[in-house]
Length: 145
Image 1 (tube, helix red, strand yellow):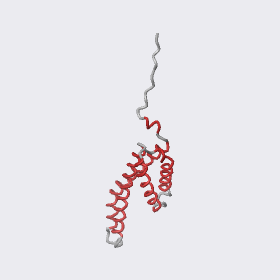
Image 2 (image 1 turned 120 degrees about the horizontal axis):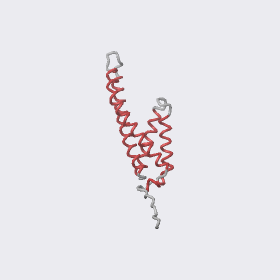
Image 3 (image 1 turned 135 degrees about the horizontal axis):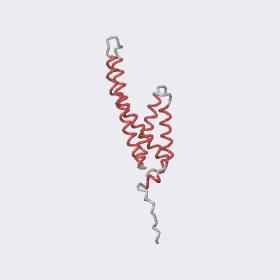
Image 4 (image 1 turned 90 degrees about the vertical axis):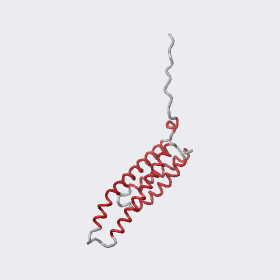
């Protein structure tokens, strides 16, 4: 009786087996950051009307409505851009592409600068998160093609 050799299944995605953990971690962090930014955009869009209505009261300061609405619009646009950049960066890093690293670097630096403005609001979490993204990106840069 002849023994049959059982072949192990081939790895379907060879890059997944070779993908460094630093790039996997960076990719996941950028995906999560992008999703959180897009959720923030939705929350800001739904709550901005309430904030503007409160500031539209007769006893509110004259410039408060203009300043608040300008700030909210700027925050929505920046969060939308950063969210899209983060998702593109996460995808590019997942595929181990150089463009993913470049987009990730741009997005992380912009996010780092923005997080400095709001460092007291989240006790520095965003700042540390962006620093970790940049460190992971630097460590995995040579694996990008």
